[in-house]
Image 1 (cartoon, rainbow over the protein chains, first blue to last red):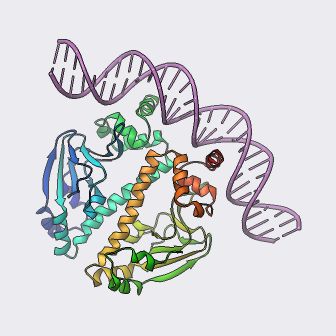
Image 2: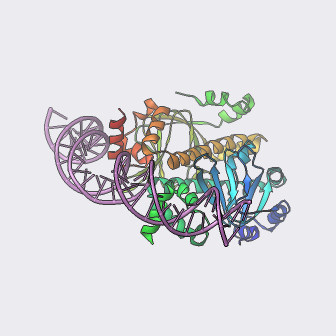
Image 3: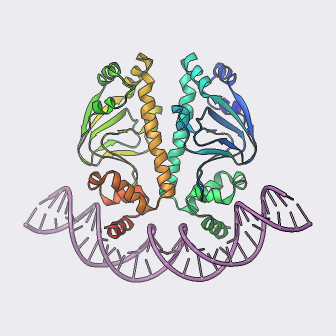
Length: 188
Length: 188
DNA sequence: TTCATTGTTTTACATATATCATTAAAGTAT
DNA sequence: ATACTTTAATGATATATGTAAAACAATGAA
């Protein structure tokens, strides 16, 4: 469990007065395991911070979903393109565990942008974080083997990973569930 | 050859008055083939539009560079993270051909942001484009085979691809030059 | 033009993953 | 508890890519 307040406290340029403004706009939301948080075709209304739990981003397919992202405790998520353009999302977001998230709506974020000159700081911070994550992901897919990607993920989130079904992790790594099962056997 | 003015004409929300303001800040720059546009460690000062030529983004390595991006005519490029945070770039950007680009500096872009209420529109547009490119790239690396990635790239830029050394394309696709050589033979 | 360097292709072999099939285990619903 | 469904593990086989070495081609510098 990591509260958004703790998270903010670590971002030095964002002072108390900003937090006051910001926290007044936050909405606490809860979802149960396997629940769909955002469905393909809906427009993303929130930028969300995970206080507890794990979230999965995927393209729903008849045969096999394509899982392309996980978000863990202490990080922001959103169907970002849908959020900033306010157009329909291309994919689903799902709770993999029971989760607690804290969200700010598109409308409220716009208000903050307009209320204070430093308003954009948070939006930029979130955008940078999401962009950096995608960038690192690209490098991971480009330069590491599936086994190395699994180990990297495992080292970052050893406990949390145990709560994710193997087939989703396999898809995220870019291999079949069979192959991941063998990798696990090999490295154990 | 695609001018930035033609590009702007296609973005309907950005009207003439915006173009007037914007174009006055643009700097035309030229680089010759193989020239380094931005070196690792330098801070990116520009967001640039390619009117003519091809650009390569890569991590310089002793043994083998890691080429992770190409930008072609008619698109924007920047060491984006370096640009928005005004901190040192992690990688190199190089001209693969003689190129003509049109750039706007960080300072001038900030001025535009402050001058007009619609100022952010352009910045957002550029950011969206770069984010979308990374997103599609992630899907490509996740769901396509190296051969399929090569064919996709080839179909998008059949002529331009001929101007890029095989080893850079191989790195971008995530395979060795030998493997790409075999793929080319196989599909020809 | 010549020589040296760099880039590309080819061959041989090792290996990891894909695919298909089967069995075991876990999870879900009745 | 039982039956049913989904997920995971295992085995056999095929294939694409990695690696290493060598030949060949293209490029650039002197």
